[in-house]
Image (cartoon, one colour):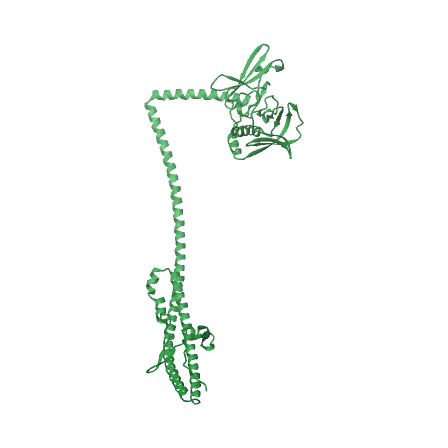
Length: 476
């Protein structure tokens, strides 16, 4: 005989409920079915209490409360996002109601099947088992009534959710429309602001032009007034006018004298760095200087002490950067008499050379294209191009990958301009990297020659070395 036991859905595991086929959607609403127990006064049905959760109405109301207040606090875009979020929430709740309704329908079918099975068993058994089956049938009837009530509540909630979803959808459409309107208004305002800005700029530019024209007119009028006032004052002060005329005449005479000196200098040549100083006999008389001796000297403009320029014994001399700011004097001994030729003023620097050297100082080294004119005083064919590299710590002379000479700055190193004369003197230097080895190097231009001398001396000075020529005095 089959025994019908008390149905206890509360003690079933959650995994068993999930695998119960048609009852799976019902688990979305509740984790377990109600538990039925026998009481002393009859049948007592007790639903299993789950965790406290807000009702459907409270959840929807929470997302839709105070829309006007939110509209005042949030921007239009944020308001649209809020409405869309509420609409999505309402859609989910509507789907949840559908699932609950489907679960109730499945429960109703299940209860009917259960009731038919119990009735078939009741006709087959008797005694105590029959009483238990009768009790189970009563419980099934009560459960069917409760499920019917629950279904009515769900239908009512479904209607409310549908109504709320419709209102939220309408509000979302209104929010989108408001966003579009605000965007269009913002674009119009931006275009209007751009137009206003352009008009203001044009007005400011026009005002600036007017101010400049007005200011120039005021200056011209002021000059005319000052000149007129001076003229009137001069008419009333004849002695002052005579003094001014005398001063003007003196200035004119001085200007004429300076002009004649300038013409004379232009004819004879400028005394600047990069030029060539020649000893010329007055009256265009021909003199053979080979029968006499010549020696060039430095003279500081603030004193009369002479410093001999060792090796400068020719009728021509090319000044170098050390000569800038000093007088150059030549003493000619001829026929038992000593004649002196001196520059009209200190040697002037070459234009822009100092700035050029300052620019080169920023580099770690500088390379120049040179030709070797002499090695240890012996003339060399000037047909091979070499590279003369001036670095911060050393100097190097090379041809391709072959190094001719390479030395660090030292007290034995000598560097100066060529003092032996010749047409190439303004573009040549004398370099002695070490004892028993010396070169005469020719550069492409006088600017490169003078910049190489200045750059090498600056780098050597940073190494506490003073580069000078043979026989030059250096400070201790």
